[in-house]
Amino acid sequence: MTTIGRNPKASHLVTSIERGLNRILTNPTGRLQEMRQELEREEGVRRHRVEIRSRETRETLEMAARYLRSLPSS
Image (cartoon, rainbow, N blue to C red; front, side, top):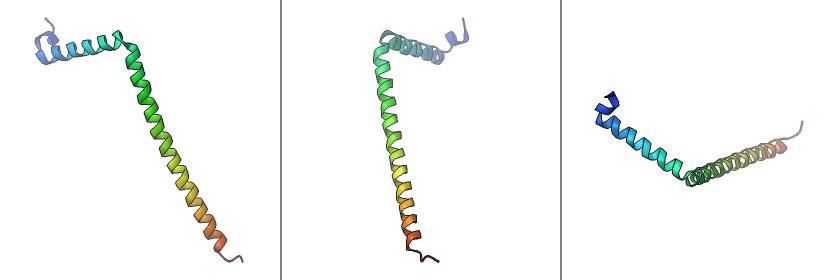
């Protein structure tokens, strides 16, 4: 008997992994749809962060330009 077979926790873990793999392989379409939705959600969050960062950068540059224009020319 192997070490895994003698250890109930390891045996339970292997059984759980087998069930998970069987579930994924039985219906890969469902899992792929979940992964796609998750990736789209993450992409939306990333896009939103980039938009915020771009807007903040633009506002900072506009403020700096206004300040520089307000300085007396020498």
